[in-house]
Length: 250
Ligand code: PGA
Figure (cartoon, rainbow, N blue to C red):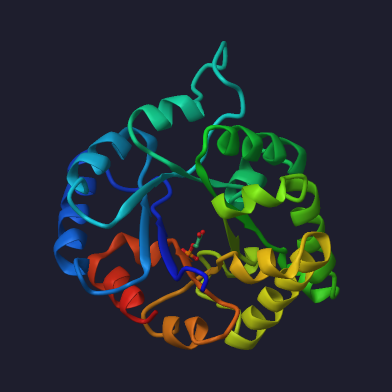
């Protein structure tokens, strides 16, 4: 049985005091409330404190990005080893904002994936089409290419450390959500693509999250779809009540 997961991508929000306050509330609110895996991804500067606050809870902490090199002259960057040294074992890679605003290509992402997997980290690999891709009916091929070019070089054994997050760019932060049917259709396509490139067992076991304007009022119907295993939540993850409501919807 594949895992149900709700992950909160906090993006560039919350200073240290705000991070600690939100995490303390989440810890109280969510303890024992679900069997799903809960992940939060605060900013780099607050990861260490997040680990400390969540020490005795089931909520785990992820980074929002990571550099592909082991170490070296890369001013401003953070390595896998640095993350592991503060007990961060999960990293979000390939978010559409990283692709769009920071020029991250499939090739670069493939290198980041390798660095994370070599450090035995779990990768939440994000991908998804833009509005014009969907309008021109190219959304399936765009998604297939993102997967093939950024991820499908990994070995069969590495899939146990991969979580997928399908996030149509047109639905991120826009209030416009893919319909549950659109999400299901794409998630089923993703599983089929994996089964063709690898095998059915890997396709069946990988958790595929949906992301893009998931809110308390739409989470339940999206999560109810058979190939949707949870969500990657942006805006609604910044508030205790709304994140808890989404977790409860799974
Ligand atoms: P959103 O963001 O929930 O605010 O649309 C989702 C994401 O970017 O992961």
